[in-house]
Length: 107
Length: 121
Image 1: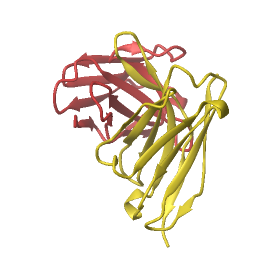
Image 2: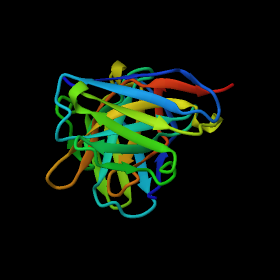
Image 3: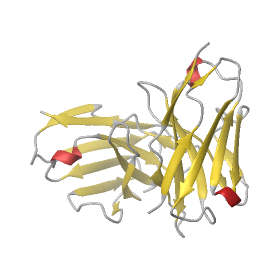
């Protein structure tokens, strides 16, 4: 299985900050990497697919980059609604696997 | 807007079978894969498997011997059965739609909000 390791596991930041979350794969997954946002008790939301493509309807302050084994999700200017948990997921090979999540909270 | 809603018992006894249903509304069940994913308390997400609208299934090898996913296109719903459950199967269970593009990229583009299933006597 392809293991995904996210860092940091938690992050405190303020409205307006720029934040970056990293996802590393145990082997190359090309650009088969997706990012999701999850507010507790709600349905997770797809943000970025194929490493760098913004899902329709997602604000442009979200961006993704990377390929191979190293990927990043960047939020350019945090808004109050962005405080949530973020996780990465690889679709290079089944079984699909996920990072353990990064919890982003207000400083 | 596609909406998914999980339903089923919130408490299952050890050694019994966990059964959940995901109702799909706002879109067709045809031409998509439909997936189950779970998250044990304090742990990461685990993909359980998925089913195509035609009935073809793909399961996580770690659970394959105990999992059955089925689809009922007439009712626009799909289901999960997990047999011989233990406390380790306690988790929030999510259903999700799989979007596949022509280049082979797959995403879980719509999710339910999840349902907690506790395995306990």
